Image 1 (tube, rainbow, N blue to C red):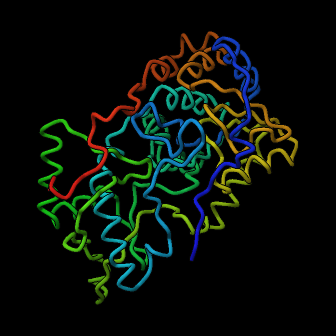
Image 2: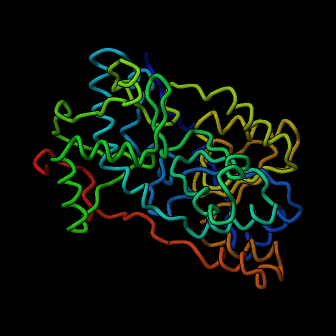
Length: 359
């Protein structure tokens, strides 16, 4: 099976965008959001200030060489077995960075608008769990599940081929106890303050490493049912895998029930996201896109775009939308004074690639 990595057409990547001042951007975005009932669609760009790399560079090119194909991950043959060992070793090393990442100022600013009801539905392409984490102290799990849709799944859960589900933290512990040499490597990284380059879907790049000795634990529930099964996968949507019908339909429904669509930090290169903006345009809804760099929707009739970093405008946008409440409501004040600002390093000081000799 041959699969193509989702990309942005060249005609789009060459589109120019007018510059705009932060104050003008704040005024325009606030005016768009003020009436409420806005559906929000976010992408990897939102999580960059949390230290998680985006999938694409400023020119729209795909920057993650380790994309995973669904048919390889689930194959019940030696090739699939080897692929899962490769995936889980890389993910074992990369997951702690995603697990420990904290919401940034944009996550909390958007959470403020969720809390006030201006954004009743949030659809995210991100699998890092940072949107739920930003509002978890205000909403219970049920409300988060009702109002936050993780379009491409989450890194927080793992399931086996027979549907038994466990938390990723539990599975990470199983991987750790099953692979002492690699846990020792992780411990050394933490002790020395070193890091490895982690991709937004939670894995790292490895070179010259043997995956054969890495142990993928068997599912204990399957063992209780009398079978051996180490075919485990994260609760993500992989390349070549279709989004479940219930998720696809819910994403369309969220757009349909909203008056406007606001998109933040996404190139819309994946069709699962791009079709939502097309659907909104077809329904003649107002659409505003906030993103740095080219997107698949550039030049699409009915879509207005502002190109400025979200961290430069979203806090002030919320203050403009909420007025006095932003300064007197303790919940809003706390949200607008929270959030990390820790974008990933752009130099070569961190260990971008793990070498065989490092373990």
